[in-house]
Length: 340
Image 1 (tube, rainbow, N blue to C red):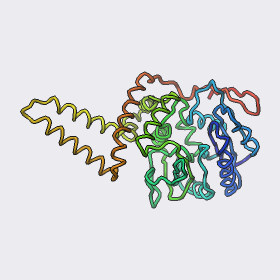
Image 2 (cartoon, one colour):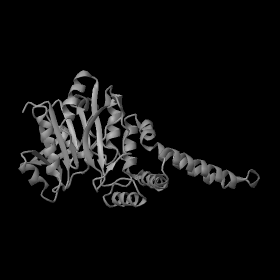
Image 3 (spheres, helix red, strand yellow):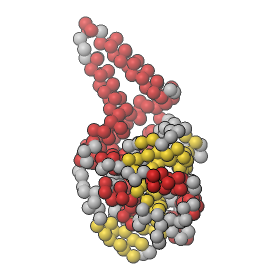
Image 4 (tube, rainbow, N blue to C red):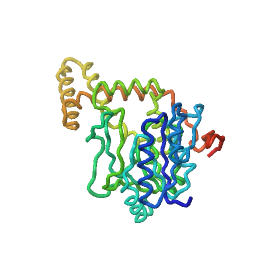
């Protein structure tokens, strides 16, 4: 199959919704004369694989013994994709049919462009549009990373800078984006609707933040942010990664520490007045940023739990070469071990 685009879909136990995702991908592929479509299954225990195969899509199955994560799934897919460009989709994402023609045209006009995003419509679990997830631009904009649920890359860029790091469980898109930029590639957002994504976990309420934290504990994801930061430092991008992805958490912790230090100042400098002033100024800064009392109150526990997450990952700073990732996958019931 000589196609310019490979569409790599990743998922686990997506029996109920994978048909819609694949269907949207097939419609989008028709707009460019067809595409190679690969589904990378993360050891599903339901009928996901059967549904995908019934739609005529190639399936690469990861085994339960492998380290499973969205990043690992994209890594596997990028190694089995054969086309000039690779579109990565999460199973809960529906790509819009007009995105690929516009994105390919933009790639052709910009040979130093490594990846493209469009606008991603995020929905909550009730199907309601979330309006404060991403910033939108009226013209083409340079960015530092692409959003993972739907991201479009030039294959050459992934080969030269390295694909997704299969050892990461969070913020893998940002870590990859910084590597691409360091290797001389640019990343763009183009002003066109790209896809629709259902966010089952979003930090809109204190209850949702606690649910996310509990989920991370259950699935063993707690502390993974620290591992990602360690890989970024290893690639020479650690400081910028921390500032871009952990800036608000860092500033929040500094604010708390400064407030606590004030309580230990000598009485002659009125520590309680200084403490009150710093606390009020900090809360005012958060409110001005969020422009919403509810989001201001949500911000505080979310950043505190993020700090706990970072501390929990200090024991996970053990780095492995992303290229030495043993793939023991299956296709059509046959084992296809490989070392990339």
